[in-house]
Amino acid sequence: MAIDQHKDIENGIEKGLDDLQKPLIQQAKCVDSEGDDVIVSEKNGSIWMVLISTLVAVCGSFEFGSCVGYSAPSQSAIRQDLKLSLPEYSMFGSIITIGAMIGATTSGKIADLIGRKGAMRTSSAFCITGWLLVYFSKEAWSLDIGRFSTGYGIGIFSFVVPIFIAEIAPKNLRGGLATLNQLMIVCGASTAYLLGTVVTWRTLALTGLLPCVFLLVGLFFIPESPRWLAKMGLQKEFELALRKLRGRDADVSQESADIQASIDALQYFPKARIFDLFNRKYTRAVIIGVGLMVFQQFGGINGIGFYASETFVAAGFSSGKLGTIAYAIIQVPITVVGAILMDKLGRRPLLMISASGTFLGSFLAGASFFLKGQGLLLEWVPALAVSGVLVYIASFSIGMGAVPWVIMSEIFPIHMKGLAGSLVVLVNWSGAWAVSYTFNFLMSWSSTGTFMIYAGFCALTVLFVVKIVPETKGKTLEQIQASINS
Image (cartoon, rainbow, N blue to C red):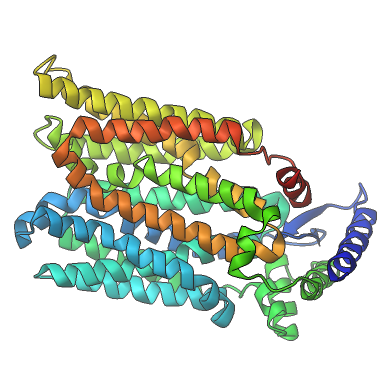
């Protein structure tokens, strides 16, 4: 009965919004954190504060990339300076993902309790503390604590930055602004790779402080998420934040009413429980969300990314710097291409193209190590290894990096998003830890075997997408969920 009542409310809202969409008035839809579409009048409005707020928030995304990219160019120097064994460095490289798992699972509570800006401040504090511990480290334990702290920070960032952007952006800008999150993660990692080739590992740690500083300063000048303020019952602050985002002269009365209506409608949904994830009507959505994250991680991205420099050395390069620089440069433009193609080709084709490319890249890298082991075509081995890794990272950047997160945000019903999203994020970071921790051990066992295992997971990804994953491009959230449950 309660669900039916909510549907009647939603239908009434949607009908009223449709009546408002007149051709002579410039309007756009925006999406709140729960996925509801609401109308934003852009007449006499301004987007500058939305753009500024997004640029401030994605400093957290850049920090995310900096933390993830740190270990690749610094591995040999840290091991040499601090005399770390392979297991000790593997723990340092992978413990960031353990911190991120915990950060991601607590991020929803933190963001709801102290706001989106408060969550970003908390995340920055953990990252700054972590980088300082790494910089001053003289033993393995302080390195690990520092790396864990930065991991906890980026675990929060991984949740709160895209949520904040979705809650402040109008629909006609939301797609482009949302891609800035992934793009800035890639830019952060690429910057760490490039700087790591010319500065010491301690100096590189200090550069990780800069995005946090910019973020903390910028947060003083941007508004809190209006959606969160309304949810907390802070009506005056909600109106002020919305007006600041849309411009002083913009008419925000309709958008304000729509946001408030969507919040009021949520009371008709039963509170989600963990066991609800196993309900038959949510099973396929959970399989899709969890499955995509499993294949994203067990395709080997964090092993290849965290230890790229050493992989190139193992393949026969005297130094991994050249390959690492190429790795860094190629990510950014390919990620931009993927963002453009996402709403043109669709999610499924982009995933299949991307997974096929990562299969080819892994196969080429594995073949290079096989040739090296057999003493065949040794002059071609280094180039083949680098080519394989670059094909892999380019293919991953165009689809498998961003699309699973987009689909995850689309397939779950409104009242299940928080709980299901936490599960999916936990699976993602758990897989990231498993791959990053085992990579060096697998390479010691068999370099060829390691990349062929990753190639196998990439091939299975294509089959999974073909058989299980629906196309979500151009569909409303209700249409997506109806197609999943049909």
